[in-house]
Length: 295
View (cartoon, rainbow, N blue to C red):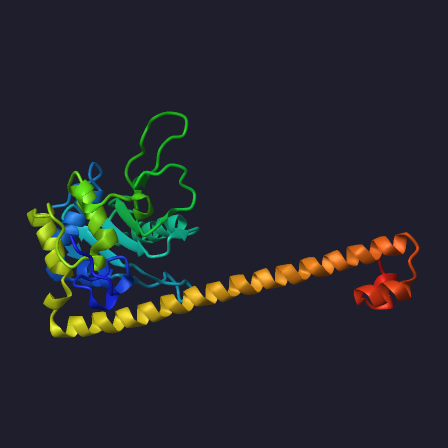
């Protein structure tokens, strides 16, 4: 299967970029695709039949409390809530704690006057990452966290359940994908680099995903918004890349200069200790007499 080389010519939306993810999974017309996404990655935790899209922006509880904005926020017909977050950065130190925070916000703000104080529905947080969690020590693509007793194998009632999809650990080619979960992982990671649906990805589920992600099928307004957002996001990512690169280079230069200065001072101290005159040391190493006397 041929892959396109120029990203500007992509046939499909970039699902690991904020604008691509929201164009596909934030569009209520793609509700079936969202349900498939959640059911695939929450398999064994919860099965969803129907969902309702909720406001993805949550104000703070007070005027001084910062609000949050989710990539996707919805609930199903049982009342369970779902928060989906996409993380483009390859390695994030705070993605786990941020995901727990988002889940706790949704969990606590369910309470209202017509509901018992602590009779709250579970919240499922799905974090999709280009890389992997900083603290993970194995190489599993999907890891889950929930409340459990530490001393025995006992799972507590469901409150906040976090599932992380670590695409940094997924390295299969399309022809190596053995099941639907593999096909989802491959598609999330490589969608915008493909010029056609991979061979074998011919199920109704995959067909719906690739149709929803095909840029040419976006309506006029949605396509314009997507392309503008892609330009902005790429420019921002490039700026961040070169800023980090310049910062690293500057740090290396400062470190090298500091190392040379420390070496010069150490040499001056050694010469002083064996009785070399201060004037001679100053002339040889370029240090002021005051600096040498202070050693």
